[in-house]
Length: 178
Image (cartoon, rainbow, N blue to C red; front, side, top):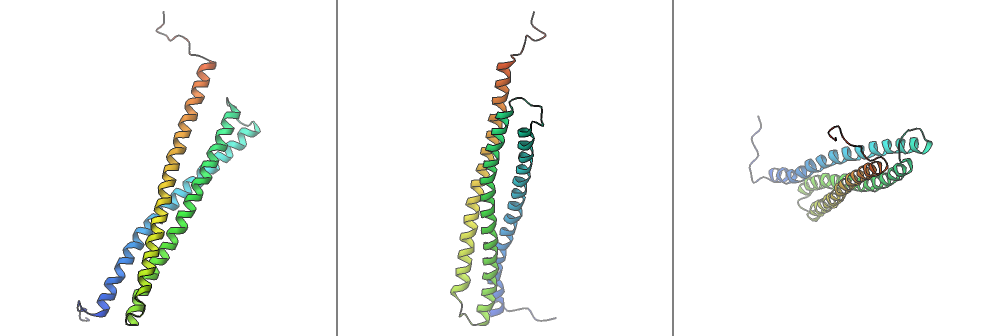
């Protein structure tokens, strides 16, 4: 069994320094997975609305307020398109950040072999990676706000349809009326 590394050895210091980018990579990977799932949900919703819009425009559905519904579908598709753009930009930034964190870890190892000739490179890669992570997080926050805005729009549309129906066909007296 090999002897443990002394704490003051260059190899131990290098391995210790390489742990920090690995922690960033783990957090970043988690964001990539959740962002990819959000993107999949947006794509699924776009497909459902596209199909609904197609059926509404061909008259294949027997529904009231067809034109209003079709306008609403177009509005929702436009919102989803903006959300998809934000997600795409966030994912690109997250993948680039991940690459920078891997590069940081690799640069630290190479710097150790070269006796600290690359001292600025690992720091620069880490700073760029963190900056990309920040940019992606801002985009994801904007996308989450867009998701809530889209939900609110859906509720407003539902309520407006309900109001229109009530005005056209007001409810009659209930069974308790005498």
